[in-house]
Image (cartoon, rainbow, N blue to C red):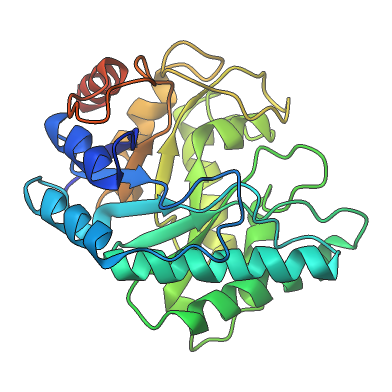
Length: 293
Protein backbone atom coordinates (compact mmCIF):
# COMPACT_ATOMS: atom_id res chain seq x y z
CA UNK A 1 0.00 0.00 0.00
CA UNK A 2 1.19 3.56 -0.66
CA UNK A 3 2.41 6.19 1.78
CA UNK A 4 0.15 9.23 2.11
CA UNK A 5 2.40 12.03 3.27
CA UNK A 6 1.51 15.63 4.00
CA UNK A 7 1.45 18.46 6.52
CA UNK A 8 -0.82 20.84 8.37
CA UNK A 9 -0.62 23.70 5.90
CA UNK A 10 -1.32 27.37 6.53
CA UNK A 11 -4.83 28.50 5.58
CA UNK A 12 -4.14 32.22 5.04
CA UNK A 13 -6.64 33.19 2.33
CA UNK A 14 -8.98 30.30 3.12
CA UNK A 15 -8.96 26.53 3.41
CA UNK A 16 -8.76 26.20 -0.38
CA UNK A 17 -5.39 28.00 -0.19
CA UNK A 18 -4.20 25.49 2.40
CA UNK A 19 -5.07 22.81 -0.16
CA UNK A 20 -3.19 24.59 -2.94
CA UNK A 21 -0.07 24.93 -0.77
CA UNK A 22 -0.23 21.22 0.06
CA UNK A 23 -0.72 20.32 -3.60
CA UNK A 24 2.21 22.48 -4.70
CA UNK A 25 4.42 20.66 -2.21
CA UNK A 26 3.50 17.34 -3.86
CA UNK A 27 1.63 16.10 -0.80
CA UNK A 28 -0.73 13.13 -0.94
CA UNK A 29 -2.31 13.91 2.46
CA UNK A 30 -2.89 17.08 4.46
CA UNK A 31 -4.35 18.54 7.62
CA UNK A 32 -6.17 21.82 8.26
CA UNK A 33 -8.49 23.71 10.61
CA UNK A 34 -12.04 24.50 9.50
CA UNK A 35 -12.47 27.17 12.19
CA UNK A 36 -10.29 29.22 14.55
CA UNK A 37 -8.72 26.60 16.87
CA UNK A 38 -8.74 28.80 19.98
CA UNK A 39 -12.55 28.98 20.05
CA UNK A 40 -15.26 26.38 20.53
CA UNK A 41 -16.76 26.91 17.08
CA UNK A 42 -20.00 25.40 18.39
CA UNK A 43 -22.10 27.82 16.35
CA UNK A 44 -19.86 28.07 13.27
CA UNK A 45 -21.30 26.50 10.13
CA UNK A 46 -19.51 26.19 6.81
CA UNK A 47 -20.87 28.05 3.78
CA UNK A 48 -21.56 26.08 0.58
CA UNK A 49 -19.26 28.31 -1.48
CA UNK A 50 -16.42 27.59 0.94
CA UNK A 51 -17.05 23.86 0.54
CA UNK A 52 -17.04 24.22 -3.25
CA UNK A 53 -13.74 26.14 -3.28
CA UNK A 54 -12.18 23.48 -1.06
CA UNK A 55 -13.37 20.56 -3.19
CA UNK A 56 -12.33 22.27 -6.44
CA UNK A 57 -8.84 22.96 -5.09
CA UNK A 58 -8.52 19.39 -3.81
CA UNK A 59 -9.48 17.96 -7.19
CA UNK A 60 -6.41 19.67 -8.69
CA UNK A 61 -4.02 17.86 -6.33
CA UNK A 62 -2.88 14.28 -5.70
CA UNK A 63 -4.70 14.35 -2.35
CA UNK A 64 -7.76 12.12 -2.01
CA UNK A 65 -10.51 13.42 0.33
CA UNK A 66 -10.11 10.37 2.56
CA UNK A 67 -6.51 11.41 3.27
CA UNK A 68 -7.48 14.84 4.55
CA UNK A 69 -7.44 15.26 8.33
CA UNK A 70 -9.25 18.11 10.07
CA UNK A 71 -7.81 19.06 13.45
CA UNK A 72 -10.56 20.03 15.90
CA UNK A 73 -10.21 23.12 18.09
CA UNK A 74 -7.73 22.86 20.95
CA UNK A 75 -10.26 24.03 23.55
CA UNK A 76 -12.75 21.18 23.12
CA UNK A 77 -12.02 19.54 26.48
CA UNK A 78 -14.66 16.84 26.52
CA UNK A 79 -12.82 15.21 29.43
CA UNK A 80 -13.87 17.99 31.82
CA UNK A 81 -15.96 17.23 34.94
CA UNK A 82 -17.65 20.66 34.56
CA UNK A 83 -21.03 19.90 33.00
CA UNK A 84 -21.52 23.35 31.45
CA UNK A 85 -18.07 23.29 29.85
CA UNK A 86 -18.61 19.71 28.67
CA UNK A 87 -21.87 20.62 26.95
CA UNK A 88 -20.21 23.41 25.00
CA UNK A 89 -17.09 21.35 24.18
CA UNK A 90 -19.23 18.42 23.02
CA UNK A 91 -21.32 20.78 20.91
CA UNK A 92 -18.13 22.16 19.37
CA UNK A 93 -16.96 18.64 18.53
CA UNK A 94 -20.32 17.83 16.93
CA UNK A 95 -20.20 21.06 14.92
CA UNK A 96 -16.69 20.18 13.74
CA UNK A 97 -17.99 16.85 12.53
CA UNK A 98 -20.78 18.68 10.69
CA UNK A 99 -18.33 21.01 8.92
CA UNK A 100 -15.87 18.23 8.12
CA UNK A 101 -18.61 15.95 6.82
CA UNK A 102 -19.75 18.72 4.49
CA UNK A 103 -16.18 18.91 3.17
CA UNK A 104 -16.16 15.12 2.70
CA UNK A 105 -12.81 14.59 4.47
CA UNK A 106 -11.58 11.30 5.87
CA UNK A 107 -11.37 12.16 9.54
CA UNK A 108 -11.35 14.65 12.37
CA UNK A 109 -8.72 14.32 15.10
CA UNK A 110 -9.12 15.88 18.53
CA UNK A 111 -7.44 16.33 21.92
CA UNK A 112 -9.62 14.94 24.72
CA UNK A 113 -8.61 17.58 27.26
CA UNK A 114 -8.13 17.44 31.02
CA UNK A 115 -9.97 15.25 33.52
CA UNK A 116 -9.51 17.96 36.13
CA UNK A 117 -10.29 16.64 39.61
CA UNK A 118 -12.47 13.76 38.39
CA UNK A 119 -11.64 10.06 38.30
CA UNK A 120 -9.93 9.21 35.02
CA UNK A 121 -12.28 6.28 34.45
CA UNK A 122 -15.26 8.64 34.68
CA UNK A 123 -13.55 11.11 32.38
CA UNK A 124 -13.10 8.33 29.80
CA UNK A 125 -16.87 7.82 29.79
CA UNK A 126 -17.48 11.54 29.22
CA UNK A 127 -15.08 11.60 26.27
CA UNK A 128 -16.82 8.57 24.77
CA UNK A 129 -20.22 10.25 25.28
CA UNK A 130 -19.00 13.28 23.32
CA UNK A 131 -17.72 11.01 20.53
CA UNK A 132 -21.09 9.26 20.33
CA UNK A 133 -22.97 12.57 20.27
CA UNK A 134 -20.75 13.94 17.50
CA UNK A 135 -21.01 10.79 15.37
CA UNK A 136 -24.79 10.68 15.70
CA UNK A 137 -25.01 14.36 14.72
CA UNK A 138 -23.17 13.77 11.43
CA UNK A 139 -24.29 10.84 9.30
CA UNK A 140 -21.27 10.53 7.03
CA UNK A 141 -18.15 8.49 6.31
CA UNK A 142 -15.97 11.02 8.18
CA UNK A 143 -14.37 9.39 11.22
CA UNK A 144 -13.65 10.96 14.63
CA UNK A 145 -10.26 9.98 16.02
CA UNK A 146 -8.61 10.49 19.41
CA UNK A 147 -5.06 11.87 19.39
CA UNK A 148 -2.67 10.73 22.09
CA UNK A 149 -1.49 13.45 24.43
CA UNK A 150 1.93 14.61 25.64
CA UNK A 151 0.60 13.97 29.16
CA UNK A 152 0.77 17.41 30.79
CA UNK A 153 -1.29 17.78 33.96
CA UNK A 154 -4.44 15.67 33.99
CA UNK A 155 -4.88 15.42 30.22
CA UNK A 156 -6.51 12.24 28.97
CA UNK A 157 -5.27 9.91 26.23
CA UNK A 158 -1.67 9.58 27.38
CA UNK A 159 -1.40 5.79 27.32
CA UNK A 160 -2.57 2.87 25.22
CA UNK A 161 -4.71 1.68 28.12
CA UNK A 162 -6.39 5.07 28.41
CA UNK A 163 -7.23 5.35 24.71
CA UNK A 164 -8.52 1.77 24.75
CA UNK A 165 -10.62 2.60 27.81
CA UNK A 166 -12.24 5.57 26.07
CA UNK A 167 -13.02 3.57 22.94
CA UNK A 168 -14.47 0.71 24.99
CA UNK A 169 -17.41 2.95 25.91
CA UNK A 170 -18.37 3.60 22.28
CA UNK A 171 -21.21 1.31 21.07
CA UNK A 172 -20.18 -1.40 18.60
CA UNK A 173 -22.44 0.09 15.93
CA UNK A 174 -20.40 3.31 15.97
CA UNK A 175 -16.93 1.84 16.58
CA UNK A 176 -15.97 1.71 12.88
CA UNK A 177 -16.35 5.51 12.72
CA UNK A 178 -13.93 6.18 15.55
CA UNK A 179 -10.41 5.17 16.56
CA UNK A 180 -7.15 6.95 17.30
CA UNK A 181 -3.90 8.30 15.90
CA UNK A 182 -0.41 8.75 17.31
CA UNK A 183 1.80 11.83 17.52
CA UNK A 184 5.52 11.04 17.77
CA UNK A 185 6.34 14.11 19.87
CA UNK A 186 3.48 13.31 22.25
CA UNK A 187 4.60 9.68 22.56
CA UNK A 188 8.15 10.72 23.46
CA UNK A 189 7.09 13.52 25.80
CA UNK A 190 4.65 11.24 27.60
CA UNK A 191 7.39 8.70 28.34
CA UNK A 192 7.36 6.28 25.41
CA UNK A 193 10.98 6.08 24.25
CA UNK A 194 10.45 5.80 20.51
CA UNK A 195 14.13 6.63 19.94
CA UNK A 196 15.73 3.83 21.99
CA UNK A 197 15.74 1.16 19.27
CA UNK A 198 13.74 -0.12 16.32
CA UNK A 199 12.56 -3.00 18.51
CA UNK A 200 11.29 -0.62 21.19
CA UNK A 201 9.63 1.59 18.59
CA UNK A 202 7.81 -1.40 17.11
CA UNK A 203 6.81 -2.65 20.56
CA UNK A 204 5.23 0.72 21.41
CA UNK A 205 3.05 0.70 18.29
CA UNK A 206 2.27 -2.97 18.99
CA UNK A 207 1.03 -2.04 22.46
CA UNK A 208 -1.42 0.53 21.14
CA UNK A 209 -2.66 -1.88 18.49
CA UNK A 210 -3.08 -4.75 20.97
CA UNK A 211 -4.85 -2.66 23.62
CA UNK A 212 -7.27 -0.92 21.23
CA UNK A 213 -7.76 -3.82 18.83
CA UNK A 214 -6.68 -1.76 15.81
CA UNK A 215 -3.66 0.04 14.35
CA UNK A 216 -3.44 3.86 14.37
CA UNK A 217 -5.57 5.59 11.73
CA UNK A 218 -3.11 8.47 11.31
CA UNK A 219 0.32 9.59 12.49
CA UNK A 220 1.53 13.08 13.36
CA UNK A 221 5.23 13.33 12.55
CA UNK A 222 7.01 15.70 14.92
CA UNK A 223 10.35 15.91 16.67
CA UNK A 224 10.27 17.05 20.30
CA UNK A 225 11.79 20.08 22.01
CA UNK A 226 11.16 18.44 25.38
CA UNK A 227 13.08 15.51 26.84
CA UNK A 228 11.71 11.99 27.28
CA UNK A 229 8.85 12.10 29.77
CA UNK A 230 8.89 15.89 29.98
CA UNK A 231 5.15 16.12 29.11
CA UNK A 232 5.97 19.12 26.91
CA UNK A 233 3.96 19.53 23.70
CA UNK A 234 6.61 21.43 21.74
CA UNK A 235 7.11 20.33 18.14
CA UNK A 236 10.36 20.69 16.20
CA UNK A 237 11.61 19.90 12.71
CA UNK A 238 12.55 16.26 12.33
CA UNK A 239 16.18 15.71 13.29
CA UNK A 240 16.41 18.95 15.29
CA UNK A 241 14.89 17.70 18.55
CA UNK A 242 15.30 15.03 21.20
CA UNK A 243 13.69 12.28 19.09
CA UNK A 244 16.07 12.46 16.10
CA UNK A 245 15.68 11.07 12.58
CA UNK A 246 15.90 7.32 13.19
CA UNK A 247 12.40 6.70 14.60
CA UNK A 248 10.87 8.31 11.51
CA UNK A 249 12.86 5.96 9.29
CA UNK A 250 11.56 3.06 11.39
CA UNK A 251 8.01 4.33 11.05
CA UNK A 252 8.28 4.73 7.28
CA UNK A 253 9.45 1.10 7.12
CA UNK A 254 6.57 -0.12 9.34
CA UNK A 255 3.57 -1.47 7.42
CA UNK A 256 1.23 0.42 9.77
CA UNK A 257 2.31 3.67 8.12
CA UNK A 258 0.86 2.38 4.83
CA UNK A 259 -2.51 3.63 3.68
CA UNK A 260 -3.09 6.20 6.46
CA UNK A 261 -2.39 9.96 6.57
CA UNK A 262 1.14 10.78 7.75
CA UNK A 263 0.95 14.42 8.78
CA UNK A 264 3.81 16.79 9.59
CA UNK A 265 2.96 19.31 12.30
CA UNK A 266 6.43 20.80 12.30
CA UNK A 267 7.25 24.54 12.38
CA UNK A 268 6.62 26.66 9.29
CA UNK A 269 9.13 29.12 7.83
CA UNK A 270 6.53 31.53 6.48
CA UNK A 271 3.55 31.90 8.82
CA UNK A 272 2.67 35.26 7.27
CA UNK A 273 2.37 34.04 3.69
CA UNK A 274 0.11 36.21 1.54
CA UNK A 275 -3.53 35.21 1.19
CA UNK A 276 -3.18 34.69 -2.56
CA UNK A 277 0.23 32.97 -2.45
CA UNK A 278 -0.10 29.20 -3.09
CA UNK A 279 3.60 28.48 -2.58
CA UNK A 280 4.45 25.55 -0.30
CA UNK A 281 6.32 26.26 2.91
CA UNK A 282 10.07 25.59 2.49
CA UNK A 283 10.22 23.68 5.78
CA UNK A 284 7.38 21.38 4.66
CA UNK A 285 9.24 20.68 1.41
CA UNK A 286 12.44 19.97 3.37
CA UNK A 287 10.65 17.56 5.74
CA UNK A 288 8.88 15.78 2.86
CA UNK A 289 12.19 15.21 1.10
CA UNK A 290 13.72 13.86 4.32
CA UNK A 291 10.88 11.40 4.94
CA UNK A 292 10.75 10.22 1.34
CA UNK A 293 14.48 9.50 1.47
